[in-house]
Each structure stands twice: as C-alpha cells, then as structure tokens.
Length: 158
Image (cartoon, rainbow, N blue to C red; front, side, top):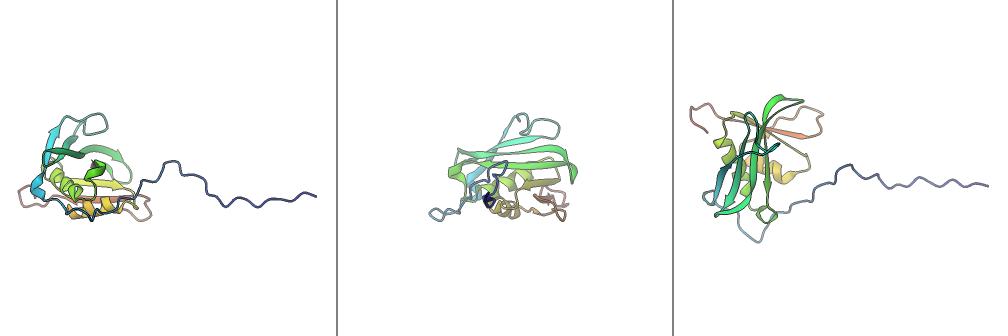
C-alpha cells in the first residue's frame, strides 16, 4: 500500500532577496541640513549618464555618505520621466541624510517633475521621500510604490 505524503508547506524562494530592514538609529541625533552637501559627478551608465541624467555624491561633514542620481527613463505606467535613486552607506542610514539628499537633488535638478520608484515595504525610503516633498502617485493595483515631486511654480527653484 502506498501512502502519499502531504505537500511541504515551505514556500518557494523569491527570485530576488528581500532587503534587510533599516531600523532608525536612536543612539545618535538626526543630522543638520547644513552639514550635508551634494557634489556634482559625471554619471555612469545607468547612474545619471545620458540625456537628462544627473549624479551627485552626498557628503556629510565632508565625508562620503552615499550618492543620488536621476535618469530619464521610459517605463510603464508613466512613460518617459525623470526617476531619482538614492543610495546611502550603511553607517549613514537612519540619520536623516536621505531626506536631505532627496530634497537637495530635486532643488539642483533640471527637471520640474521627478518620480521615485521603490518597494512598498521600503518604509525608510518612503518617509525620506515624503519629507522631501514627494507624494504617492501609484496607480491602483500597481505592485511598486511610485512617488512624485513637482517643483513649485514660484519662478524660483522651490
């Protein structure tokens, strides 16, 4: 007599690993905006190089903290648009540097409308983008979070 085994309840692995959760650093205070600067850089392929592309190194008190760049991409559901990406060194995360980096990059950018694409589970990036003036512009049912920032029309760059 043959006994059938129950199927394993173990899930299959996801194709890309889920990023580690970044916890707020409570042991140190948030940084001052005056201590953060953006240094313009030449873009590299996929990171600010190409028509409409821009790239900056983020520095905190003169030390490299990460980078932020803008590419012009043509992807659904938006079409042709400026897309911002920010990457911070591990030791720079959770200190408020990302918020300032997003904001300064948008001020320095040639683009009036900038989008940020991120995972819906990336709460730290969402909060940083919201603090820099981005708002949720995701179409209903879309799997990623799409945030949008529009430069004000006061004649000045914000």
